[in-house]
Length: 274
Image (cartoon, rainbow, N blue to C red; front, top):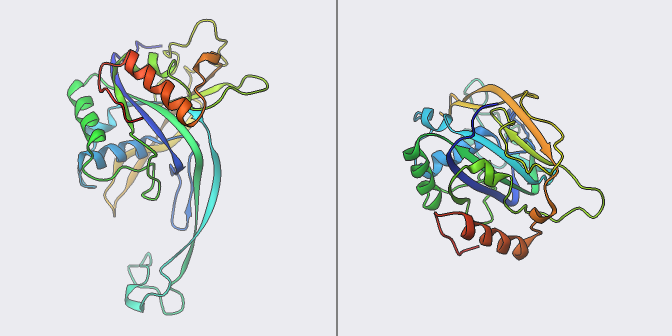
């Protein structure tokens, strides 16, 4: 177990569709069940207006912890690419040539998360970096999206810059209703051990989260269009039963509780657009 970060950003990632690929290749485009580091770092880079070939070393130094408010459901969509185009405009093959006439249409299967909602903490000791990322999320240079360009967020992404972000991550309203039957554990995913999560002491914890549960290939090394590179990193997972008082419900009920929480506990930014 290590000390909790003192400062960070809290984000709300919610929308009709999200898609966070980890093994996408060619005609099969998958999605993870939670936001990936590469997807969130790419979103920050878009907000900052960085070209795809620019260095992301400062952004990859941010640590990310995800709380799954609503896991959503996975759905697949049928796509075709390149149909109806002249021979000199069809999809390029791996050899750098255009596909021959009559074979220009490709079928692609793409997966999405529908009706999912996540709360994310980005932590760092670099206050200037956190401030520049916050400014970029408030007034992005390029549009922000949830993994793919076809997945816009349903509202403002930035909740605020806060002290002790992991404390708030375990206490902010959940964007879901309390289960009618038996309580369901809330999942947390991180890139560092999750034993530091300050969970309420009265709540039984299912796992201390200090040992990684596998690897995920989402640590970006390069976003250059012709030379995208990612490397695996350990994935830490923790689940816990949170108090009934944290369930915020849906729609305006949840947004009102979220607004009340941010107004009460956050010093910046003050928002009234929820």
